[in-house]
Image (tube, rainbow, N blue to C red):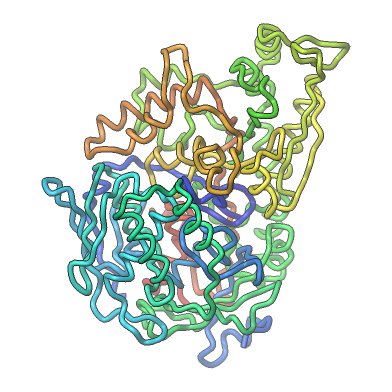
Length: 613
C-alpha cells in the first residue's frame, strides 16, 4: 500500500494529484538544505518458484506494487504526469535514481547519482555534482543536461521545486547550478530526490519549456496550457534508464512485471539480485500472493487477520511509521453547509478515531492525538509545549457534537439530522474498494455518523477512479490521505492536506477538488493558509519556520478542512530465508524512514545489505 491508503502510490508535490498515502514528517529538519551527506557503503519472467529463483545466477527479489498495464499505464514518468506506470512506486529508485536518498533519523543524505552538493547561502545557489562515468541503458553518458531537462519539465508541470528556484543550468558535463529565488531548507529535498530523466527522450519538451520559462510565459496562458497538455499526452517507448534495473516491457502482464538487471546502471555491481519481480494489485490482490510466499516484501496496508496469518507462517512484520493516514475530505462547492467550521468540528467529535483505526488496521492504525495536519511524531520538534496544549484532541463527545450542530442551525427530525434549509443531512462517502485499510475506515466512519443521525451512503469505487473524481469535484465526502512521506518537514504534509486535492492542484486537471478557500478567519484572526504554509518552508532559519508551522497547525486544528482519522504505521510482511537472506532489524534506525519515500529495503539493496540467500 502506498503512503496514503492501501494503495501503493506516494508523493506530495502540489501538482502530483495522483499521490496517495501521501504521508510523512518525522524528526525535524535541523540542517536540511545544508545537511551532511553520507557516502555509499562499499558498496523470462513467469512465476518463478523459490527453488528456481535461488538456482544458478538467477537471484530474484519478489515485491508488489500496483501499476496499470499499457496503454493506459505508460512510460512518461515525469513528475506530475498522471498514469505513469510506476510514478509513485519506491521501486522507481531502482530504475530512475535520484541524486540521493535520505536517512530520516540520522538526518543525512546518501548520495546516489550525485557525487557531492553544496549550498552557497551568500550567492543563493545550490550546486550538484554528478558522479563521473554514469551511463544510460543505451550506453550514452548521463550529464548535467539530463538534470536541467528534468527540472525544466518540473517547471512545465508546476512542481513545487519552482516555488523556490529561479533558474537551473549546466556549468559543465557533470555540474548543475540551481539558482535560488526563495531560500528554503526543503529545496535540497526537491533537488536530490528528483528522479533524473534522459534528455534524449524528453529533451524536445524540456527545451520548449525552458524557452517558455525564460520568456516568462505564464503556464496559465493559452500557450502554457497547450504545452502542458500536449506533454501529458507524450508516450515514450522502450525506456532509457540509469538505474540497475529496467522494465522488461515484452513480458509485462496484468498480474506481474519484471525489472531486469541493467549492468550499465548505478551501482549494478553492488546489487546481488538479477531480477526484481513485482506483482500487480492492491491489497485484495496481493494478500493471497503473500500467503503463498511468492512475495518477499510488500508495503500494502493488510487486514488484521491477514497480518496474523503472515506471522504464523514465518513472515516478519516491519512497522515503519508512514507519517500519514486516511482523512475525511469534504466537497465545499456542492455542500456549502460544510463551510461552517462548527459542522466540521462536530463530525470530528462524532467519530471515535481510536475505534476507526483499530477496526481498519489493528496496531498499525493509531488515532491522531494532536490533529495538527502532520505526524504526531514530528509535532514536538516543531511546536512548543505551550502551543501543543492549544491543540484540540477532538475525542469522541456526542454532546459537544450536538451542541455545535444546533449552533450551526441544524435540527433533528425524529432521529435524523436536517440542515438549516430543512434538507436531510444525506451524503455519499466515496472510498477505494481495494484498500484493505481505507475501506473499513470509511465503512466505520459512515456507520458512526449514521448512528448519530446522518444519512451516509457508502460508495466504494475502484482506487484508480477515486482521485479523478475528487479532483473533478464529483463527490460529497471521500476518503483521501493527509500528511506526506516525502520528508520530515511539516511543509510537505500541509501541501498534501491543503493543496493536493484542492483547487491549487486540481487546476492541472481542470477541476477545483474540495474547493476549500485557503484564506480563512480563525479565533486568532484572518490567515492566508497558502502564504503561511509556503513561508513554513522558506528561509534557512528553522526557528522562524517553526512560527509558521505552528500558525498553520493551530489553524488546521481549529478549521479541520479535512479530518485525519488516524496515523498509519506499516504492517509490511518480510520473508527471510527463501529468496532474501534478511531484512533490517526491528531496532535499525533506517526503519524510521517512510517506506514510500526513502524506502529502507531499496536503500539496503543498493548497499548489499538486503541480498539474496
